[in-house]
Image 1 (cartoon, helix red, strand yellow):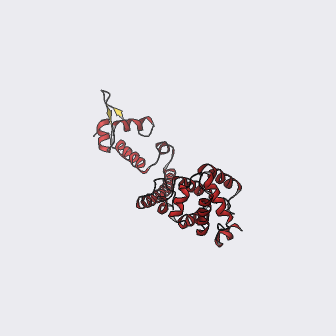
Image 2 (tube, helix red, strand yellow):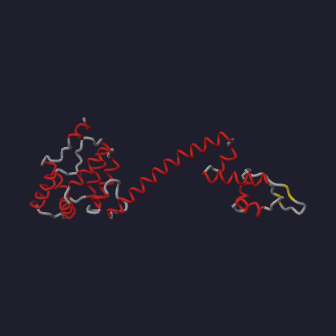
Image 3 (cartoon, one colour):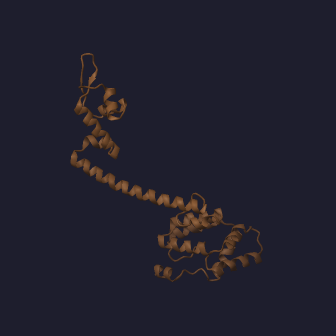
Length: 237
């Protein structure tokens, strides 16, 4: 029994174009033809086509199928398995982050770990957190998260709304509030900051906050309440 190209494609659950593509790549042998020029596919062609479809279904690139023997294809499968494992882990992390963002109704681009507090932060503060999470190592990011959480929402709101022409008394009062909670997370004096990271952070602060806000941060720093905790001092030593 023989089949036409269309019949072979239907049997294998694929398309005529796919069959022709496999022929063009040299993955599927050309069949004999009848006197009228029509192709005559046989069982070996069907088996080969099903094998090709299975390998493609597993993710083996077509270019590798023709170039590798059985042992080489197994190595390709092992590499694919490792890649899929990494992709599954990334997908699981992404799903967990998405769930946290949706649960907290946080901005969609909130950095990992800050979902619970992001909604109450200003856009400027969130921008700085984005930069910090890129510059800091995991331990420093954890310290940053603790400080952001520790800052009362009222203090965050006052700092975000502070106008450039805020009075000296207003600045002093707000600096005292920031210093009292010991959560001046916008500081650039952390001992773990290397020179390049500190320069980037200083530049970010300069462009993100207005002069009055900078003055508040300087006053809070002068109060001496932004020193890292014992764990952070140990990390810095």
